[in-house]
Image 1 (tube, rainbow, N blue to C red):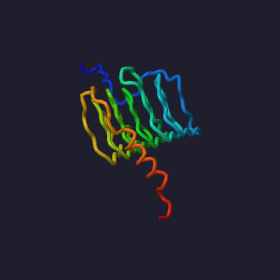
Image 2: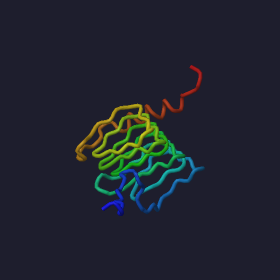
Image 3: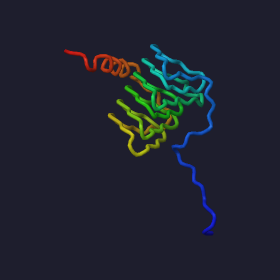
Image 4: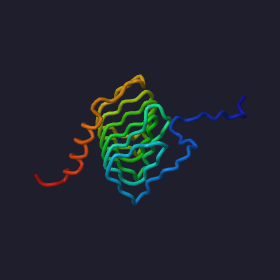
Length: 151
């Protein structure tokens, strides 16, 4: 009773998922990524990241990863920065180092203490399809590109 410890599974512990696609720390991609498999992003992507709704595809944004655009997938884990909206059909996880500048639509969510969100959160039933995903991403990309520039 007192001698045994029960291990609990934290919702924010990374699983042993296999990533055939890795965008490295020094890579920068401009354009829309249409995924057919899970991806880990440690570099920078300027453009939307889209996975089909009927596929169990994960997008993991590492602590050095940066996205300027919308992210749409079954499972999305953010440890880096996203300047755009997130649409998770199943689950979104924000790690302590996450910074999201945009709205999050999710079926299930987990947030570590310290994660930052500058936007709204809306729980969905997983059957909705985002209507204005591309329009919001373009505004986020424009804002990110013009940040710090003189008027």
